[in-house]
Picture 1: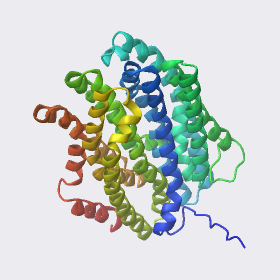
Picture 2 (picture 1 turned 180 degrees about the vertical axis):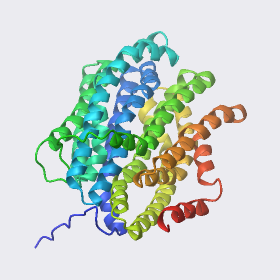
Picture 3 (picture 1 turned 60 degrees about the vertical axis):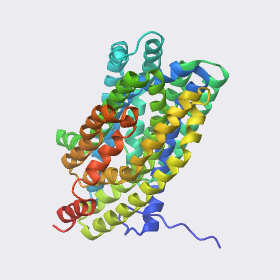
Picture 4 (picture 1 turned 90 degrees about the vertical axis):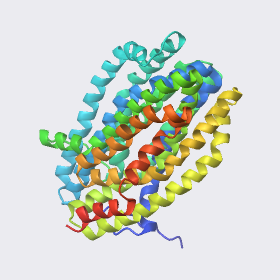
Length: 450
């Protein structure tokens, strides 16, 4: 007789096995999101050439910067909705959820128009000229046409977990990812549409990823959430933005830092430097997705038990998460260093010098994965506990202040290796600033023993 699978709920006590089962769909969801974002670069690099590939990498931070608003509203709103569910107010939770979805759609439409018309000026500001400028404008405008659905997709990645439907979130993300991969192969590889084909493939996949969950929540369903009459309290949006400010800060900072990286690399290594950094970032997105996926999957559980006042379970979740992130970081560092050569060949095998530059850069950059998971975990826990200010401060230090300082100063002594090491210096400075153990003991005392 086949044994029935026990459904995991937010209110459960989480063992290691139960916790991993619950967060794995979110991890796979983020992995697929990252992978299908990487596919554009892979096809553009191998079928459209190095100049088009550099253009994609140069302009990508801009739509990602705007799209981060959806992720902010998702993570920040998730904490509010999950906490409200934990308090037993399901109708209120649905009204808050509906307000956040409506806000995301409206803001997405406005930002889409703004980005579309600003694209030429932004591309020039980034230093694009000639053929690269034309590619940047074309690719950027195509992505901004689908920005609203991209923001909605980011929003629902967190809310599908809160609704206790992480597997459905994974299915939708896989469907969007496969759509992008198939269309990239068709538009870029077969029809030779170049950078325009890659942009169209990404836009269509984002529509798939955003539209399907929107329809699901608009209809009667078996989840904890459904779209209904939106709440009218402005305070809900303010709290949502405050809670999600760390995720917004992370994405804004990453975009700004990527611009600075591109500037330094153009100065030191020219177009090859930007292309190599693009490959490293694509692979970094995949590795980083494991940490972010864990945080996305775990956050609603933390918020639920925080709303229910279950401090022992919060302590249990934190301790287990800390150990899992530490082990994952060490494993990923070793894996990334070992795969550096293979990953460089996949993207830029057509240029030997560029391939070696990429291999070496990624091997050096990979040391950062040792510290990355713990930093992401700390920020995510504060967001889930409704303390967006401290979460934003951690994100600000991790992704902007220390990294900007490192990428400006280290190349003066280490050359291009200083750029590859900048992220490690920034993350290590946060994790080891007083001593990692005492730092997290302070976290523990502040939130679990009070």
